[in-house]
Length: 160
Image (cartoon, one colour):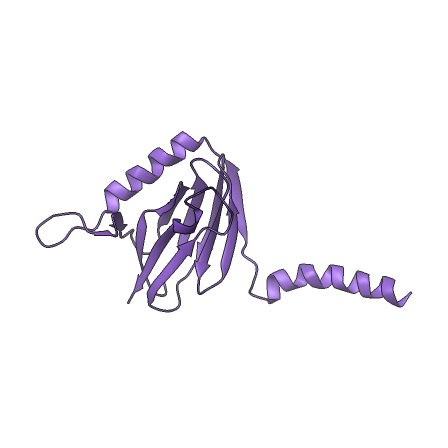
């Protein structure tokens, strides 16, 4: 009887913890054509590409740096073997992140915040994030995706 009651308690507590625990992300997931998502991400990167004082595109380790409007939609693509593009976000502003994969299952792991999402081709995951501290945050793939898996990284820069 005690084990049954404990199981019932834990079942309802897990549901409650989603709302009071501030650990689980509420996400939306939609079916998407991977090629169309790639096009959308490329359009997003082109529209919000950061330019230097000479008008040349700014990149971080060969990945374009993109500065979306505060509070807007952000698109990030996992593909062999990168998280693309690099993002520059404002501290304290909420953004709707749209994540998907172009090829294989990848893991979106935002470090050191420890946000983890499995990202699949054909599905668009949407979550709302509000950066609370400045700095450079790494995005790593935590789902083995092939020989270059260990190099699959990205960056999210948060500024004042």
